Length: 287
Image 1 (spheres, rainbow, N blue to C red):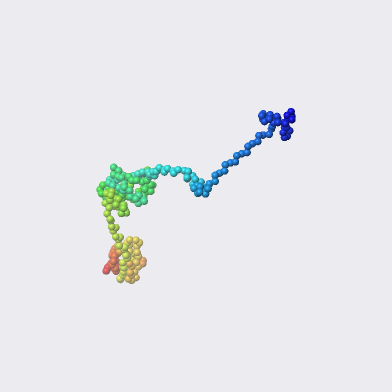
Image 2 (tube, rainbow, N blue to C red):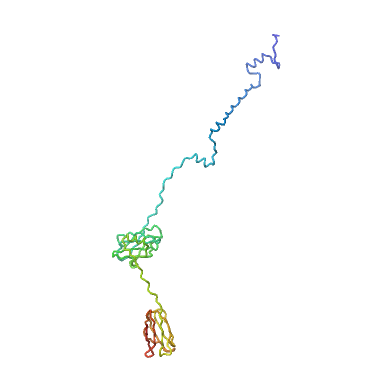
């Protein structure tokens, strides 16, 4: 029994099994792997702990997420607005008395102070817009205290304009109360002027022409306007405007006109003109 090798299952002797175990050879089968350890289970939160957790909220939009991450922008520095360039125009006056003080009225109606140069014959004023150089009015008080103005002055592209002293108008132009106040501050004498009443409108007055002892007569009346012709075969009413008329008379259609004098017609009266045969003429009665 002891002289024979003990055999185990599958017919392997025990000596070979021990040698194989010591050197790790004689077997191609891989060593058995240990099973993986199970993953730890997540700790389940009870209801009270869940209530303590803050609610999670997804961002409503990408912009909101960026605003949350961005910082507040710094304010931009104030940039001063661009100022209008200073442009000066000059109006020169040829001849006449020197200018003491002046103002310029531009197309917009604005009244601008004028700076009189040392010569006394040139006025400088601000004209930043091209419309300030067309159709302007120059208002001046002269060294003899006379107040005059020039109208419709055009300043050229070289910022210069020229007017003649003889082209000025006496007095001040039409001004608003505010403009009058500005001129008073510059030394002008501004007084309210009352416009004279318009002349009464001429109205024709009745004139009766009476040929008297002439059976027929023709009159030519020459005054303002076209000559008037009055043919008489008896009394005739012919209204005339007040004024003076040169009278020519002829006694028959084939005859020649003869001068008979001057007829004066007065306003507000009626007149009767009676012809005289010898010498040829007329008489006038008025009432």
